[in-house]
Image (cartoon, rainbow, N blue to C red; front, side):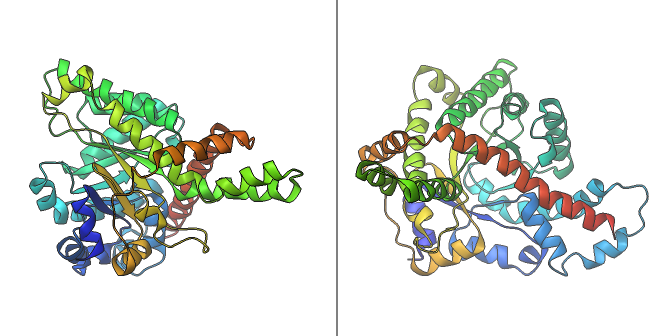
Length: 370
């Protein structure tokens, strides 16, 4: 069996972290759905920047938009991106229907410039939700301190949310609380809970990249065998250990009387979505962040290269709950080594906002020049 399709047997949905117009118009997206069991798409400003400025897919539209004085660069960008989101959502609509609203989603991100502004995030998410006009779209909202109250409000209004830029278990728990509280608000208002969907996008490989760099620098100056041993134990291990323990929090948070009251009204759990699953270190297996995080009620969104690699030589197994004691020991070794997970994850959030803002700025500049 195709290894990608086999993931469904373990309860994991495969989404694609990529979009461009020719993916849809060529029939490739439909082929991925039919042949690989693809169940969703995620996008971000960097993906759209590469698609629009790095291909000829949008040449005709760009020519048609040239000289539109009534549209600012952001409006011009959205006039290109939103039709792609709509078209992809239409391809995935049968998946949405077949899975009763569990899969079949396409994600569109609010401007990264709004990551620290709660009210502006809410307003833009509402506007994008209305503009796309598809029940199977998710609006991506960053899990920043300012984003979390926006998530609660949007869920309460019945807007599907993909919570992005999650790195720590502590932030993840706050996001789940916002989701559950939003559902409770909607329930009090008499709203339908069964079609409100959300995922918590937990970033993986970026954690190893950051911590490996810190550990390698510390190894160069380590003076004791104990310190060297601790540092060697954590290299290449923290991202997966952190993800495994986060999944255990998912299982704990979506049980008990509070959640069961919502589930009886049709509420769905907010699945953990593994993001940043491409392997950055060439010394690591190119599908490690897929193979080691396979479990029920999860999503893995993969860039095309990782999707193709896993299709070619992925080895599916129920890995997500293997050696949980070892995962806990790994996180304790990190603390013993004197590396603060909180400081690392806080920096990764700031870096993530900046990294998504840079291509967004390039994209707006490129569109403005047309």
